[in-house]
Amino acid sequence: MFRSALLRSCKPRLVRCLSSRVSNPNLAAMAGDDYLYHIGLNPASDDLAATFGDVRFVCLGGSVPRMGEFAARAAHELGVAPSAAQPIGKTDRYSLFKVGPALISSHGMGQPSMSILLHEIAKLLHYAGARDPVWMRMGTSGGVGVAPGTVVVSTEGVNGMLESGYELPILGRRTSRPSLFGAATVGAIVDAAAARPETAAMVAGGRVVRGKTMSADCFYEGQGRLDGALCEYGEADKMAFLRRAHDKGVRNIEMEALQFGAFTHRLGIRAAACCVTLLDRLEGDQVRASPEQLAEWDAALGDVVLSYIKHELGLPPPKC
Ligand code: R2B
Ligand code: URA
Image (cartoon, protein in one colour):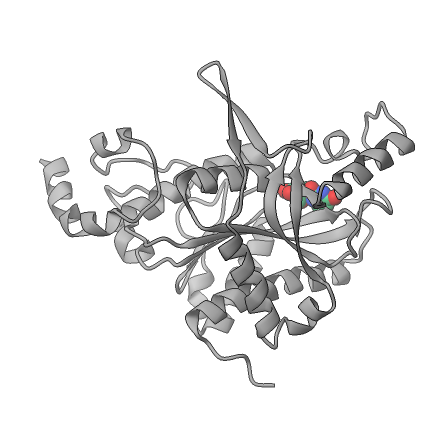
């Protein structure tokens, strides 16, 4: 009885659902009763279409406070009520916000944490009938031959072998998916940054660059650091690897872009990974920037993402 009532109420949404991006025939059989456990939402009891049906941008970043601050800033710059910067659903794992046309969420550290959120957000937007939003990861990273404070817009994610495949064992088989970001979305973000007064100087000063991003499942050994609790190689080995990575076009190293690019590419989702660099790994391993400097670089990353969103929405630059 409840299920058929739900189906009736979903009917007008089915046409819009055609444009959403999931690839799982089992979801239809669940008839909308799919508890998105980690974010605490369910299409059977929450009106996802009303809250999320108009999402055009998905902005994801690792840390809860950073994404909370970004939500407040986005509300201010997009002219949305500050109350929008309140988290929706469960907050013990992720903090999710809906600010005007933007869904903003933290994703935690590393690919396993991000993967859970990507599956649940993709399903959430599918059930909500959102139309082809652009997904952006807004992260921090270590630069490879670029100045600290540079925003690297990834063209491709590579693994620790400097290869494009994101590998995941599924049912006892190694599944490898290419991690690619569409040139059109990457270009649109860089072009918007160049065109908007908020970010034009960053682009002109070489502080927004395209490049490959290496993702590791480890901050220390997996990223070739010498300062972990365990290290079985030397400075020369590390430098040889980082130079090889640079020669192959890698401009930054972090912990999620590879999986993000593989997931979104597989589902045909328009996506970009925009990560600010906190240090140049060719110069060292420790993140020693002051809190003020880190806040400034974080704001610069927010500028790039908001420039793109405002450009897409046709919003004017702020008055000086
Ligand atoms: C960047 O920063 C975090 C590690 O400090 C990790 O989530 C990443 O990708
Ligand atoms: N995040 C990373 O994963 N690596 C860095 O070097 C800096 C931030």
